[in-house]
Image (cartoon, rainbow, N blue to C red; front, top):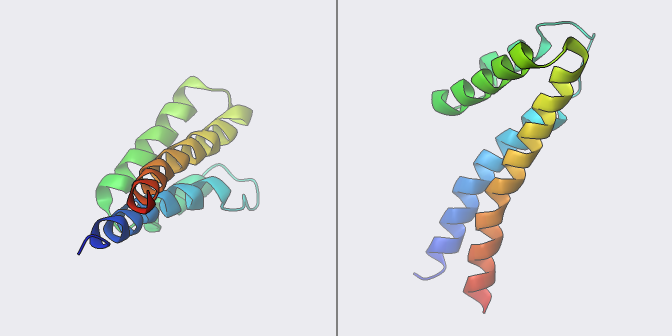
Length: 97
């Protein structure tokens, strides 16, 4: 029963981390403007996560120049994915100590 908590944490936060890394490392094809909008339109299972990344993309588009906003969006997604990995690592370290 005590192994349930690390496994549940790994599954839940691992899924969110996977989505973040998917958005961060998906190859940029054909260099067109709506590419990231196409990714966000069908890649997520949860509407809240999709809405969060859509708002993050719109904020990056609004406040950053055209050449930089895609890089900034990918960096933000990578950092959020890394933050979702931290609870997994902490729970497993506590479980084995």
